[in-house]
Length: 299
Image (cartoon, rainbow, N blue to C red):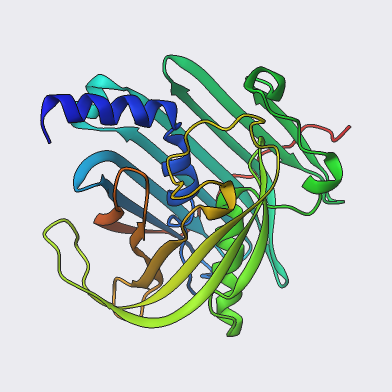
């Protein structure tokens, strides 16, 4: 890819808001599925994102899970030439409890910098399913309508939604599930379809190859989208509903250990998007639980 094409790619990616690349795509990748341990178990997973064959993003996920609590943190930033031309970074963190009927998020935060402007989201969850939202910049500054409160009730943040789906697989449901997602700006459904066991081939970019379960994740927009959409990064056709699905593969990294995300693929207007697992490390924390923040009162 020559200098002219790289510059054009960066300009288009800026207009398309690459937060959609990492948050929508990687949020579907950064969670584990395994029997809940009595001791806290922490995984650190490193990923590299290629778009059209070019490495554009690095991401790190840290997952901590015990029998009654979870914590997932994802950090991502543009890399290499694109990082110098178009610096962008983000951090997402979700904390919640694990219940027999699924997860119950307590707090979700996301912060980042896009084109030099800070962007933040804080979601705090009440016991009745209500969600208290703090978002900057506010919806009216982004040509979008706020999501009605009734559509946010009983929703999940993107990271908690994936944890909820994957833990449901422990009861034999696989990854077949529809999860209502509210990310502070948009309300949409993540529709998971179990595609069965497939083979992930060897790659010089990845530390994993072998049999893995394939989960297809589709996106159904509900509310909170821009009134005049920009050129979407994901779009192949003329409408938001045509956003291509994301294929996610999960597999154990240590024999009978927990299945973890090992590969992610989707399409975009700039070519194929592939997320490779580049490193994985596990630490057993014998006396540690994921943090339990004290949420602000729900008003």
